[in-house]
Length: 404
Image 1: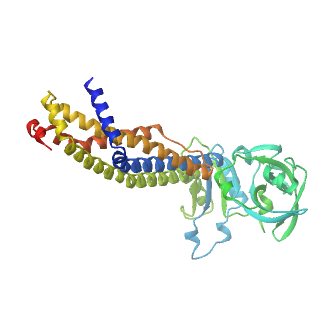
Image 2 (image 1 turned 90 degrees about the vertical axis):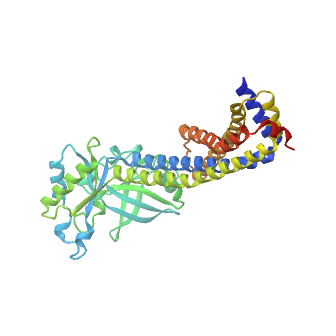
Image 3 (image 1 turned 90 degrees about the horizontal axis):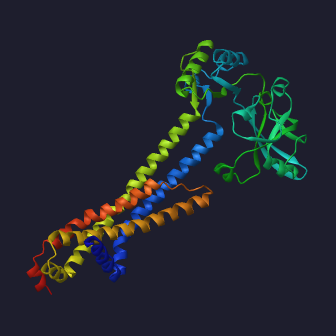
């Protein structure tokens, strides 16, 4: 009952001094809103990164030459990865290498009627869509016959189909592209659809990702300087990558460190670590304003004690104990900080939602962060309100009654 009475007294005091109370809470509001906004934006960015890697495949791996070891002598023919090297890798790791393809890319400006655009072409092996998350809505993906016959085939996305042909299903249509210094007429064999990503929104031009049989992008011979792989997701990518590169170096009679690898999972972990560290660092800096807000609460509570000295004297003369006065002022400071924490939390969520909304990203609010933020603000109020409360509790009732 006494606790409820103290809460009513605290709310009454805050209500009587609305502007002063708001200015007192401002430091807490700014600190909490900054921490909530930063951690939410960081969590949202981390979710976007994870989503992109999940789409690409966390079991993806990129194998390439150690360019530092070719700096002096340049790239030799024996350094290049040959078709027989790929076959040897597949034979040595039949259950661990699920997909392997020379890493080859090309681009070409094209025109269909009066419609212009640019194709970014990626060379793929058969059944690439089984590993890279996409939906084949019309036709098929590049298959083994396309690879073996070096057929002039292409798979485009639905947006490209609508852009060039004004329809979703353009299977059977032709696209004339420039490859290796000559024009080639590619037949569309498939149309895919992929869930939009934040990177798609950055592409404001008419540029489209397409897929062709990788031999079409090989110029001169069948060698490659890098490989794209999908590996057994149940294996440790670092250990398996090391085994694959060492084996390739051995059959090529190279230094064990001549070939290197990058796994998508390792890159995802690295980016998440960077984002997490940045969020913590910036959040910690923003949290300094909580200390400033706490000092503001202590300052105002000291003023309040001075203003209410006579009130304290009356309460003590009527039988209020020292701990009752202490509890009264502690509760008032905690309520000030708690209200500031609630307002700051709402403001922080609003800022994060607005920022992520502009970027077109779903905002992620972690309930635990909100609870910690509000709880921490109340603890700040209690910590910085302790000294004024103790000062009020120790007042001599006779001297307090004489105070003018």
